[in-house]
Each structure stands twice: as C-alpha cells, then as structure tokens.
Length: 419
Ligand code: SF4
Image (cartoon, rainbow, N blue to C red; front, side, top):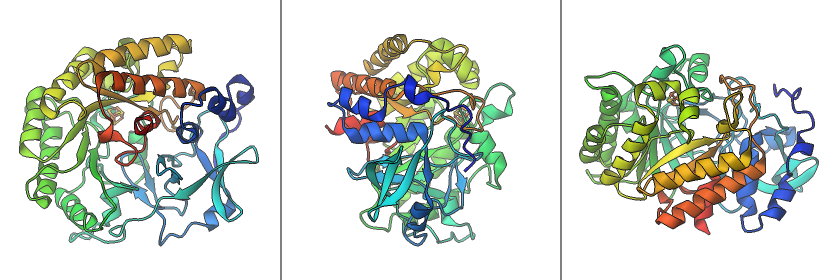
C-alpha cells in the first residue's frame, strides 16, 4: 500500500474515537457511525482478507468515472444491516485522509474491520453480478460499461469532465481527470454498448432496485449543456424501451440543467429522479472549490434550478449532494465546526423548504486531487451533520428512497431514514 503515514501524527488524541462517538450519540445506529468512519479513513486489506476473496464470486474489477481497477482486492464492503461501505483504493494510493485506515482482516473465520488490533464489526465483500464477464455485440466487456453496487446498476457515460479542460475550472476535491488520464478508458461510452449491457444486467432476478447514471459535464451544444442533455436523452431513451416505454427506478446525477432541458429529459425518457450536486453549501466556498460550476452556472442559479426541478420530478425525487468536509479546506474554509454546522444546515433548510433533499458524501480525500494535502474533519462532525440533514428531511416530509441504503449506499445520513 502506498498510504503516506507521515502526516498521521497524533490524530487520535485530537478527536473523539469511534467508541466515544458511539457512546455520545446512542440514538445513531453504530452501523452508520462505523460506515462513516471507514469511508472517511479508508481501508487496507490484510493478506488473510485478500485470501478470502474469490474472484468468481466477489466484485474486484470496476471501471467507472472515479475508478479503473483490475486487481484482486474487493471493490467494497457490506455490513450486517445490509448497508454498504463505499470505499475503494484510488488511483494514486489509498485515501490521504490524514488518519490510519481500518484494516480488513479475517478473525475466527469471519471477515472483519479491525482498528488498533480490536475487531470493530463483521463485514462482507460485494458480489459480482451475472453479466459481469460478458461482452456486448461490439466486443466491449460489459464491466467496462456498467459498474455495480450490491443492488444498483451504475453507468458513467462521460468519463472525463469538460471543466477540467479549462485551466482552473476543475473542482478541487475531484479525481476524475487524473483517473481518466491514468488509464485507457474511452471518454464517451457507446450508447449501444450501454443499452445492451443494461438489457443483460436486468435479466438477473432479485438483484437490482435502481439504474443510476452520472458522468462529467459536457458544456457544448446549441445551448450550454445541450450536448450532455442530448447524450443522456439518447441513453435513457434506449433503456426506457427495455421497460416498455414506462418509467423505471432510476437516478441521474448531472450538471444543473435548465428547466427546459430537464423537462425534455423527463418527458422523453422514463427517468424518475434527479440530482445536481452543489458539493458545498456556501456561496464563497462554492466559487473557490467548484470554479467551473460557479463561472458557468453560479451558486444562486444552481439552487434555483434544483428547486424548479421539483416542479418536474416531484418532492422526494430531487436532491443535491455535498462532499462533506471540504468546507474546512484551508485556507478559505470554516475554522469552527459549530459555525460550519449552523451555516450549512441553514442553507440545507432553505433548499429543503422547496422540496430539494440534501445528502452528504463523506469526503474521501483523494491523493490525485488538488486538495490531496487537506485533512477531513473529525468523525463527530459527520455524525452531527448527518443528524441535521435527517432532521430537516423529516421536517419537510422529504423521503430518502431515491438515495437510500439500497439504491445508493454512499450517504450515511440517508441510512438514518430507515429508523
Ligand atoms: S463537475 Fe466538478 S466534481 Fe464533477 S466531474 Fe467535473 S470537476 Fe469533477
């Protein structure tokens, strides 16, 4: 492992431990807290854990917008309550979160998460879907086209992002460009390959509850972003035919489209839910961290587009994702957790009042991002913010089904919606 421990220092003395956080927040499921911490700190695999991987059963290869991996380590982990821990080793090494990663090991015949020689929790490896080793009629391996989570098909049609093509416009936490340039991935997937792969994947009974699409921004077209809208319209149109022209459980995370663009996408395809990630809920930090989004759409307009999307998709079918923790990036970020919480939850409340859900991803500091030397916040902050997002969704009656533990699995705060 190429994990750099040089800056880990005495981090354990500076923040509450996993056990202390679980004791302080008994109302929060321990599974949620463990998942948050494993995603924050990352994982390493002991030799015994790697020996327990069966590549005929377990998912080891993944190609997506942020991954390009063919080694025999597991793609990720599942917990006993059926929730996922979305963590994998990046291009460039493990997360540089500033802390030691958890160790995945085998103890008494069980695969477990270990920290400081103490077994924390039993876990299992994600399993491969039936279609994984098949090829499309053009000879493309289907795993190059559709990646999976335990109950979801993931499609990443545009594996680069136009914002990275303008100097200074890429989002500072984002690894997509580095991942793209590290491998031999096509920039755009072939639509026929996508539709064929989905057709094959949905033959497997009882596995999939959702079809998910996301990829990098495509700025071009007659109107700004029309190329992105047209591409998704063609892909989603092809998938919709597989479902007899009806709506099907699906989510698109895209750039924030205009009302007219989104209306076209909704009317012409079977798409059921929509996400446009604002990444950080603070106007100044958005401009600094997501300069391309800020220059081309802008913070206020991004929020306005989310709110108007609710008119099309309905409450509970539109949300926005945050990279929780980037709000502390130096030198411009918050310096105080209480101030950050108050400010972010106030903005989340405002967005939710027009029906937009707000969900958080745990910032997995990528060693190939501009922010590679930044340190993510302590575990307790993540738990406090997750509680806040959950409280706001309940206040406005926004359910989390479009991004719950089965359809996504990447948001510890939406796992609280099960309780
Ligand atoms: S919009 Fe930002 S976060 Fe998304 S792929 Fe482009 S640079 Fe990365």
